[in-house]
Amino acid sequence: MTRTSDKIYQNAGNPPVLKEVPSSAHIILDVGCGAGDNARALAGQGKVIDAISASAAELEMARPWCRATMRYNLEEGLPPECPGPYDVSICSHVLEHLADPARLLRDIHRALNSQSGILIVAVPNIMHYRYRVQLLLGNFDYTDTGVMDNTHYRWYTFASGRTLLEQNGFKVLRAFGDGSFPLWKLRDALPARISTALDCIACRYRPGVFALQHIFTAVPV
Image (cartoon, rainbow, N blue to C red; front, side, top):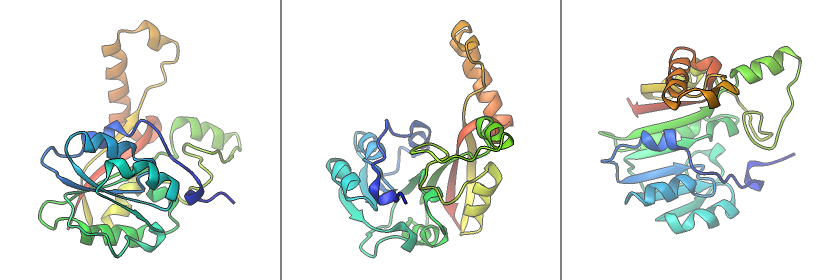
């Protein structure tokens, strides 16, 4: 069986998540940091990053951008040495890897600045139209990456993602879907402003259908 700690998640970072980080935020906890792609972007803005991963290889790659790196099984919450308080905690495509994310969310609640701390969460959308079609066809095949990653324990919808946070001590201030409208080859023929507008409208009014990921910005209550 594939384990999260055996994988290295490396990409270009998650721009929609990074845009949610306030300019005033200084000390950030990157939970499930992958290879440090978000940390690299944030460090370039002068932020101080503490990073956590179950993978030693990921932490080695993330270390140049971080004040501290901590190897820990997130099923058990945050590591005891996690300093805090933090202005922001990021969980970008992390919660779906946990059998029970409640303990982690409770620990993050305590680690955030009680007056101004923010939690930013991104989860993949199992109800994206591509996966709806596959499910209708009777296909539920795991893959090495993406929504059907073989280390995912849970899947979330736009509604259940919000409910998860609200049931664990957070108030969701902003929730949106990040994805695109299926224009296919027509996208190349349309002006960029029109295709972008269609993407925004589709994700705003039907995030459960067109979003590849759901993003939530929440505060502890």
